[in-house]
Length: 342
Image 1 (cartoon, helix red, strand yellow):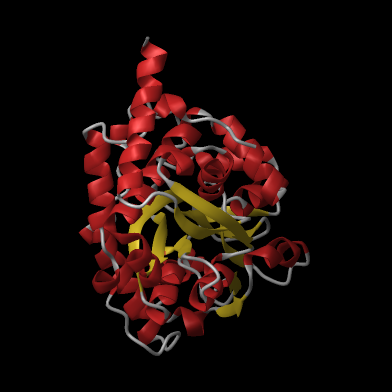
Image 2 (tube, one colour):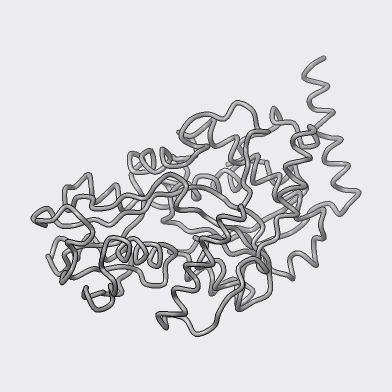
């Protein structure tokens, strides 16, 4: 009888979704080398969570956030999913809204094993490789300035380098330090190529999710709320089946699972099983917006970008808030009905 009632509740949820526009269609892009966000995306891809919420999706993978942003701008995806800065860069070019925080991730400033100093100020005069267009670059510059390097662009030799080139740069000793994030951070630490000089604090690195205005117009409020419910359900399922989600993402990314395990420990929800789905909160706070605005202003001041961006105007939490209210009231497909599909 209980099984029948669970299935009936799930069926009713789908019928209710149908009344508001069943089978929302979307093309979802995610990064094939970005851990934790990858496990959540693979869960959406390889379970029936989207179907339970009345959504049909095609999935596309990209090597990093900038490439996904270009696809978003070109209309090849309905979303941009990256750190806060790359997400905002894309939405500033093509109308859309940032609708949710997605996951936590760790970044670090790593120095070669023979580096003599122990403070960020000891980087003065050194060769520092960093992905300049990334979400972490302005944050790292802020830490360096706070440490006493008043003008990092003069005090260091800054090399704009993709994260995929960092291991080779350290091996070849062409740099003294790199700015990196997981799983590359964990890979570098495990291989002994470098040691940490600065590690980000929990929650300092955030993934942000945006969808295009075209998607919002096409799906309406209900369709976007359903997608937010699906994302929250995906986090819940991945946290309770993390080994499976990591196996899936390991197949896609070819990243060793032990590196994915280290990355998941940095996320507030994937580091341990979430018992109550109502506890998952993906709100982008006012403080998050202020911190990101400061970083965006820094880039304009340093002429890394020409156009000033009003972060608050591009963030819209109404869809997430409604999804979280619905989940708190039990208005979501039955979690017992989630199944692996491939």
